[in-house]
Length: 282
Image (cartoon, rainbow, N blue to C red; front, side, top):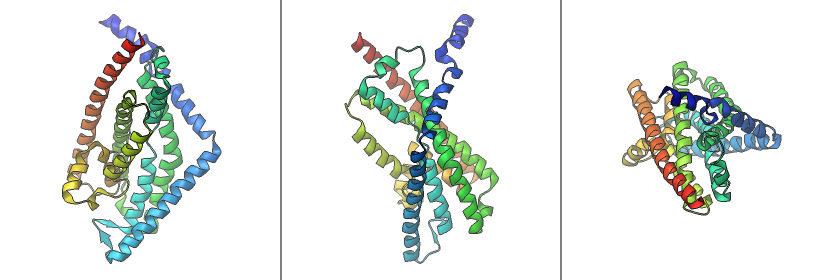
């Protein structure tokens, strides 16, 4: 048993240090394209302005200062954070779809490293890029606006820390889910249409388009227990102080539960797929 453990530790496929270069290379590649960085910022700012004026019109037409627990300043903060968090999607889905579609995955599987860890660490570089370019500026903008609107006391340091904990869970869920969903590429020849449908469903049920509290109660209850709510709605509601201590604990427990479920399901499907691929490939 000890010899087996020593073998696993010495095996490059199980050394985390073997995968750090993939993260670094991915991050450096993305940062080298300055034009992309510029359009990245402009696209996010445009999205925030469009949704802000939309919600401003909704608040004005309603004649109410508070809608489903949200004031207009809180909604603006929600929009900024939604834009920032939504970009932390990583590249697991696109990388896997490309490799499956081109057949490159067959060559990747014979390399002396874990394919799954390599994909995850490459995606981590993409996530770090989005966090640097969108996440940190988004959080900074939120705190500046909170002082402008006089609601900075609502954004406590504790909620910020809990927000990052929840966000970390959401990133694991997102990568694991995208990995599992990408395996459909072995069934269909083109994943583009499926990814578009998946994106629409995730944005609707995660609270990226509209906060879940604006849905009918029955629909909201269903959406709130799906894994997609853990991606955006849960971290943002924690940040804004919409959850009590008990609700935060339940939210963390639900996020961890989805991590376990999706990881186990992904492992099961992956083993079946790889076994079938090896048999077909001889």
